[in-house]
Structures are given as C-alpha cells and as structure tokens.
Length: 325
Image 1 (cartoon, rainbow, N blue to C red):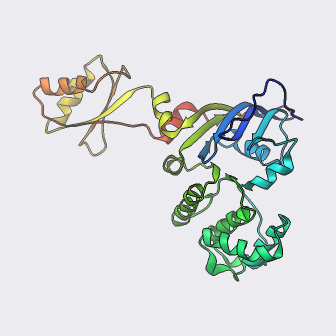
Image 2: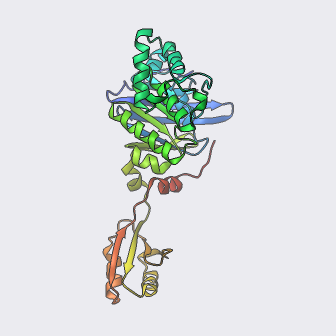
Image 3: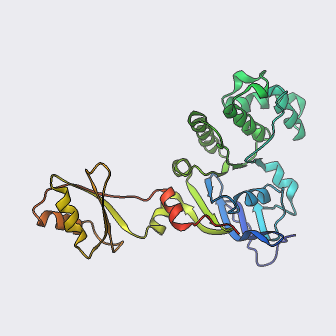
C-alpha cells in the first residue's frame, strides 16, 4: 500500500487533486504507470484516454475504492489511503455503471443515501428538494425510478452523488448511452455545478463535448500521462504541421497543380465539394503568405485563405495509438 514520503511536496494551496507517481498493478498488468497529475480547485477537468488507458483506475483510487500499488494521491490535501474517511466526506463519485433501486420512488432513493451520509431527518427533505431542482427533476419526486428514462436515471444518479454537498465530483462517463438531448442537459448541469464552485473531473469518449465543456484536460495512454493543461494548449503543443484551406475564383485544378509543385508544400488535397483546397506546409512556423504568393503570382484570384485548427479529436488520434498495458 502506498505511503507519504519526504520526497512528496506539501499540498498546493489551489490544488483539488494531486497524484505523485501513482501506480496500480493487477498481477502482471500495469493499469497506471507513475501518474503525476494536478487538478486545480474549480476546474471542469476532462480525463481522456482509450478503453483500458487507466482512467477508471485513477478515479477509483481517488474515490478510495482502490488502493495504489505505489505512489500517493491527495484530495484537498488529504491522503486517499491514510485519510480515506475525510476524502469521502468531500468527494462524490459516479461510476460509469451504477445500479438503481428501480422499485423505489425517487425521494425514497435519495432519502436512503442522505441517511447513509448521516444527514439528519429534519434536513434531508430540503436537501432532496435542492438536488432534484439542480438536476431538473423536481416534478419526478414521487415517480418510480424504474419508470424513468435512461437520461433521467443518470440525473438521479448525479443527484445521489450531490446529497452530501461534495466539493469534488468524479464522473466516469456520465453521458454514456444518453441520447443527444439528454447529453446536452447533462452538460448544462455540469456547467452549473462548476459555476457553484464544484471541482469536476469527467471521463468521457465524447471529445467534442469535452472540448467545449472543460477548461483543462489530461490525455493518458497505457497508464501514463501524455498531456495535462488547458484545452487550448493541446493544439499548440501537438500540432506538427500548419494547414490552411484555400479558395480561388476559378481554375481550382490549376491552383492544385501549382501548389503540388512547390517544395514548401507537403500536401495538397481537393475538398469534397471542390470549392476549397486543403494545403499543408512543410514548416509549421511558415507564414500563410507563401500560399498567397503562389496563387496571386500565377495570375489566379485568391478568394479565401483560412488557418485550419486541430480539434481535440484530431490531437487525440495523433498522439495515441489506443494501446493498453
């Protein structure tokens, strides 16, 4: 079992979660490999990786359900092994699959878990009302959980996590299996929770949503950290080539031929609608004026020259191979 050592620095004031050399073995399998990670208070933090990359193992260690083989993890300064009880009081964990008591009414279900957190009977009703209002299900108080849609059951699961008012939420694939409307509703709830001061760590395969939802992300593969930082920093750190979308007034085929002949250009592709050309330059620091000069000096009229930004999915595919330990 892991232990603090003199080499581990003291807790960072603004840090909600810190891991130092966090490692977890399952027999000969290494699920986590010396993971160093810092998540700040107030972050809506996206945890990204292929299946088997170590995301769920990390969340289970942070939530005190699993002990690390080596290394240390702290939640709000509390060691997840030595101070597990303190961690559980300030943390809410929603696994990727959780069971619900389908024959219970919504209020009965939440009352049961509120009692488990030793919330007094006099306070429980107001607590239940508050969390149901937060997840938008106040009108479902008396409904049987088994009669609710998948999206509503997910929101009830989130309400359960919120009954003890945790400072940090660990959400493992909270939008898994939801239809588009239910996913949008779930993301809106998470944004509201962040606005209320919660620190949220969310694991998800829906990278386009994480890109707009999260302020910071981490990418892991084979249990090791590839990147951790602002969403905007992912593109700048991993973009290997500078790409542009080019438009000309006419004779687009001639423009393609001219660009392909130039040594400064590494790749030229006609877009599917044949209204734009995608151009990659050899030098990632090169200026777009190179392309403009090629087009204009050939007597063609340049109508568009736009930089192509890599999105989070592009970066993820570029820097990972989908490998597990």
